[in-house]
Image 1 (cartoon, one colour):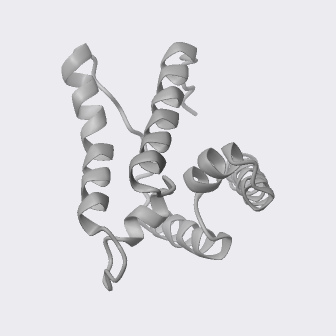
Image 2: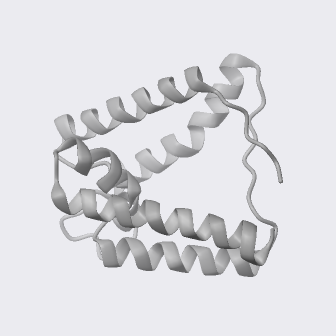
Length: 144
């Protein structure tokens, strides 16, 4: 098992940037910064959607680590499973969860909780409890 380094400064800065981005999206576009909803605007039909803004938002997500590496000179690493079947099942479960929960962790956890939404509190608690259970099962029951 790989241990992730404790990086409180980077985490605080990253969290602040996410908060600023969420506020800016709400202030300038009147939209909640939920990644599943933004990605959903890239899939036809586009009626009432803003696919151009969604493309720019997703490009920003992809560009951020590249810009970080260019500015700081530090490499970035993203570790994901090499098991394609596991990744496909995980992706389907996340997609089902966001559709069933009416949003994702960013929409409910960042924006919804900031608006004191009880629905978002319930959804975020469900996401977190499911994540805790999944990690426990994968690490201690399945082993990996």
